[in-house]
Length: 64
Image (cartoon, rainbow, N blue to C red; front, side, top):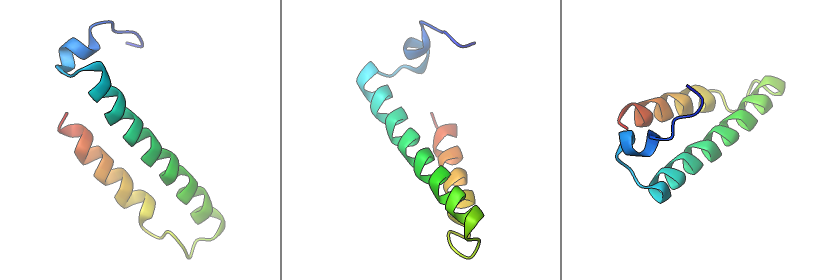
């Protein structure tokens, strides 16, 4: 579902905490996207940055 007006209630988290948490994850994903693009052009750098970063984020999100 794209719109869920009760998402914060279901998550049992405040608007501010939710915003901070999602903003941090979003910034990390942007960084990983840039690292992945650089790795695509120069495959000898950022060898495991993207895969390990995505795994870390997945682990953190599964705790929510």
